[in-house]
Every structure is written in C-alpha cells, then in structure tokens.
Image (cartoon, rainbow, N blue to C red; front, top):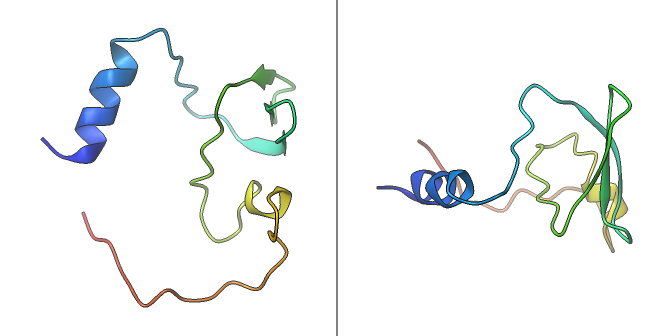
Length: 77
C-alpha cells in the first residue's frame, strides 16, 4: 500500500468530504476557507495546496510571491 492509498483509506473511513471536479478560485488562509468556481465556500480545518506550478494557494502563503525554484528532485508514480 502506498501513501496515496493509505491517505485515501483514512479519508474514506472518516467524515471528510472529497470535492471532485471542483476548481478552486481563491482561498482564505485565515478562516481557512476555499472558494470554488461554482460559488461554494467551503470552511476547512486544513487546506492542502497541491495544485501545481500555477497554484491558487501558493501566493496566499507567507513568502508565496517568491520565484519558483526547481528543487532538483522528481517523483514518479
């Protein structure tokens, strides 16, 4: 079992909701809340910003305006 499967199993056995096919247009890290393109605002305990190089989340973080730097590591599935 890999990390993805372990996390998914924990999520599915809890009261956590996964929002599929949803586009995040903004976040409020102070609340924290996520704003979706369909107008939903979802309050959260934790926001995981895994949305890639054109991240909506990263600019909202401290030092999020710093230039991207290649980390010299790769991850392949």
